[in-house]
Length: 206
Image (cartoon, rainbow, N blue to C red; front, side):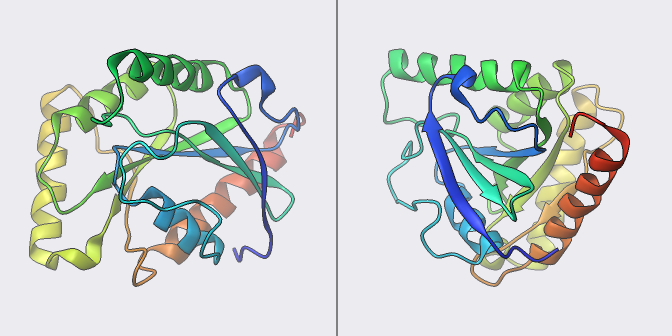
């Protein structure tokens, strides 16, 4: 799939105000500074569609982008951002949870993980929540250009081990990406295209 158009539609913290269009949605979420904005800009061939910042917690709203006029890319606030208050963090968590558990248009979430680091408890816990809530998701390992192939394989193996230890039957589907080198772009967009085709074919509501 090639992305020809990517249009910002709305930002809000109230799921009831999200677009009413019954189009498939793909939500992107991860810890702060995981490279989410850079990845979104790389996928959409735009330098400034998603705002990038070195300051963690920059994305604080649910952001909808209409892609090719037939699906939504949803940019969600990060979890584990250290520089906001506990009160603010709990508010973010509340509407993120509300989005995941009530948004019927969501067909897949992408949990972004910085491949440079070994398995982080906060990522494992978040994915456990997704699994327990039966929310379909894939993993996107980011910043693959920053470390060697050997370390990439080692860190992915560590995540597999941690997830199996947390009663996962298998590792969720994952993608290894680099926004700088466009690594994983074709694979990720192809996956979304395949899911979209299945969704439109099998669900009359879409």
